[in-house]
Amino acid sequence: MKESSWFSHPVGFAVLVAAALIWLAPTALVFADQLSDVEALEAQCEQEREARIKPLRDMEIEKCKEDKNNDPAYCERYWKDYGNSTRVARGGMTPRMFDDLPVCQAAFQARKALINRDGG
Image (cartoon, rainbow, N blue to C red; front, side, top):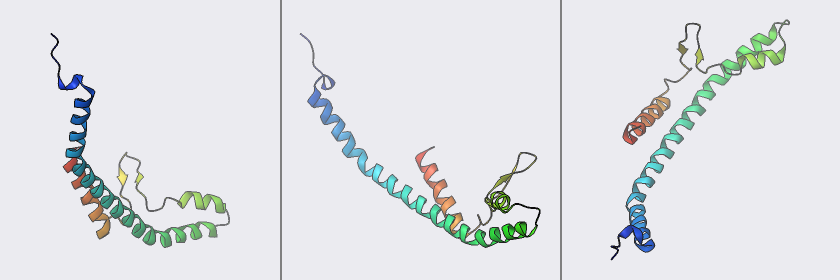
């Protein structure tokens, strides 16, 4: 006589899957909530950085355009990423501007805590 198991019955397997989902759902919801909080902090950081970088970028573009030998479109393209991190000749990176703002530091710490909590 063949012995039956939980996994051989579709209803038993469905109950097992449903129980696992109910048990894991609160953890997934908490993680999703923490992730959205981190993303909101990062977005706020980007907004504050852009608000501080934009006048500096515009000033560099205008200075470039004052030189009659430069094409205005070239000036726009050349300075479009002003303030972002860039690679230097020896392979290192220059840090992006205004990454030391309190909201940016908080966003970095929150992302780091989320990654360490998640284990990955």
